[in-house]
Picture 1: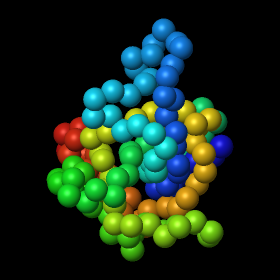
Picture 2: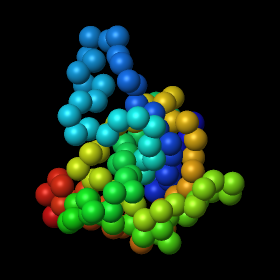
Picture 3: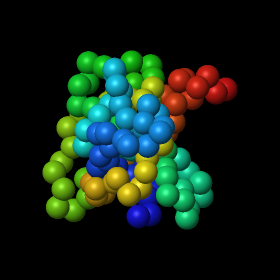
Picture 4: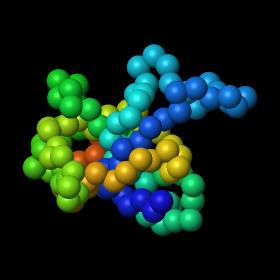
Length: 130
């Protein structure tokens, strides 16, 4: 599947892994688990012809918003045709994850250009990029 930066995709991380690296693939503690929307944050040139992309999960728990958990009003989340409209959401920029593209279930929308910039600022805060 080809993914685009700013696209919102339903991603289902593996619940259990049989690999020797299970600790790095499965979730524990506060990590986001289960089928959920992720925003692709990696550049399209970095995603081209690769089996992975970098994403940030979304949550509708807007009370989690802060300087690096970016509040995204529903108006900035553009649903694909036939998909349910979005609610106000928060991009959890401190939960960045490499996504296996075979685990993406479907594309459900995209961020507005302003929202992509906002999420980028949240990532810059988390990684202390200047």
